[in-house]
Image 1 (tube, one colour):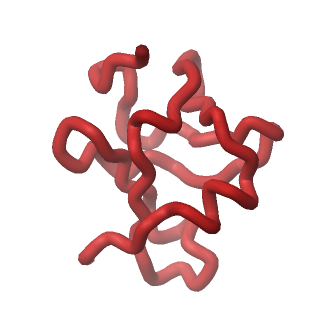
Image 2: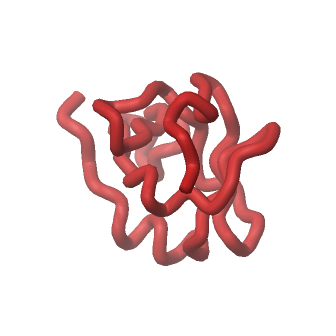
Length: 79
């Protein structure tokens, strides 16, 4: 299991298929990653992904889901 302390602001988030799906804005609580607005399809909304989706962390946050699944299942954050 990945520790939330390994995830830092401004880290790139990559899907299982290697696609850029976002950049960490900050952690939302202890169980969600809030992505920057710039990575939103419309550039105006933050999205949240659960830390449970994180496979591992090195210089990037690597997810265990493909990009299409991430985008279909992430949630809009209340800005």
